[in-house]
Length: 433
Image (cartoon, rainbow, N blue to C red; front, top):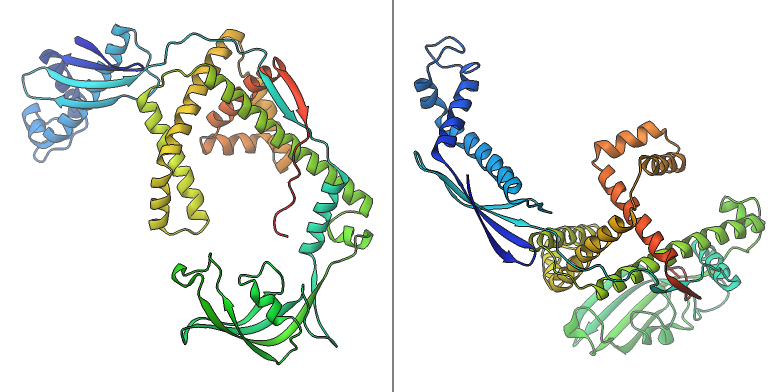
């Protein structure tokens, strides 16, 4: 078999492969020999039809299967012959498959980059503290109390800042109604979608209608109305005030804790775990960034393309789950093409660098590591280990688990070998207040 190897890029080669005609004949003979045992051809008993009749009935199938087998076998033989170890599936092209002539085709393959492994011990890392302050704990408690707040009717006084109005409203610009809603909740605050409304509605009472002019904010939608003066009419049906539950043992029981002390201890533990997780992710980011910056190696083009497609699919799924329209998803994905390409290159560089470090330090994932992870999942989900393994196997998730454990071991090793300083993590108040 004839093979010519051309260099396409730093991590990519093209194999020009030529299979002699006798191999093609052997392929067809083998196909028809197998087929003759089971083929059913009108006028002949099963397995008794001559090859000439088989060729008439199965010519197209024969061509497709023989070509597929020949290309695959020739490609594998070419890799062995040229001592190549591709890191991605090949791109097969330029197939020339004609009767009584050699089979010719091209196989473009990605190969691992060759590079010098630079110093990876002693990286300078900044670990954020997992300490939870009383202020942070109180913020979470306030958030939980806010989520369980009651909205009580206001009696004996007009509306004031902080109250909630249940009202109908109508906005007009140039005598044209541009927005109209019924029985909406309006929170009297500086954060109202039209800030000037809060001041105009303070002092209103149920059953009262107020009309006033207000300038629509710059972020108003539709954009063509932003900055214009609108005539506003608001009819108030009810006024309500928010009442938070007291931070006492009674509230703690609604949160599944025996007492406020127990609730605070549970929240402290959860916040600590969250900070530790965020801190570990930040350490991983620092490690990868420093390795990639120190070793800006070439990466295989096909591998990059496939990784970009994976990242795009992930982004599109997230957008779809957020309710975005297909048109908007396509537009946003297009805008992210450059950044996704950069991230794909970064991830692949990191993979090859970590792979070399793993070889150098003999870091591997052992069977006991897999078993321990499965046992942990089983315990947290209250399932049997066998059921967890079956689920992971059925959904092709074992390879992902292996990769996660492998990367985790490497990051842990590099962090342990690094010079680490510790700083406080900026507070991250709960969302939703």
